[in-house]
Image (tube, rainbow, N blue to C red; front, side, top):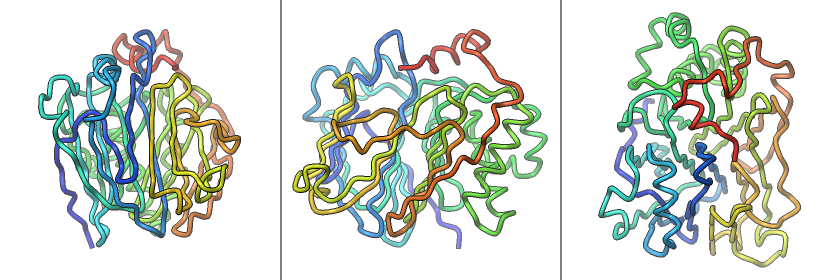
Length: 321
């Protein structure tokens, strides 16, 4: 069964039904970088509302520093993916401060884009959808002509210009070649890129209606995971997360009573349970919140890129926070 995603514009910041995800000035003006955020409470669905009304002024400052796009993905009860995207800075959308988005899902995927490859329009804005899966990426892959040739007819899965969506198409192909095994598809695709293309970073989150995968490769950018019990490390509290610079905030009353797993670009509260993924680590969160991980890519890229070797626009998008 092929599910058709629903696309809508999403204001720059959002809150989640009990869960408020407010990306408050996520990086400094010297350090713009794409932000990845994934959440799963599977098999339980979490009602969510996404808005910006209660955000402080620093949110507008963040949109100036990350001007190229924001996106949110989640799933309807029947498994249909829903994707909300805004390919421009939020401060240019006058409606962003008034609109609220309500949703319910077991998995969520959010992304803030500072473009490295591809124009500033909807088709290049994350998350991307293919075959009922949602995907977002932080990093830079070069050698796209070779990747296009390797994709062959599967290049038809790609509707935009980004390296990210091309890589996702390769993941989709390899997943199907491995009988629907997403872990095998991700590893096979990432290994081919690591062996054949110039690569700066390949941090990704992929979600289905009930599962989440995350890959950190190589050691360029950090990616963190939190296995959060109901009530958090205090045992009875709602989720209230803030990034290490006070910029990324998440609040969830619902998760006071539900367990969850969060994957994010940085630790977002004082919990000692946060841990960084190791370089090359593939993490999978199953439909019962069971977490498994392994070092799937132990070797460094064959053709590593440094920040100085990237195009100016790509380098600007990848400076570490």
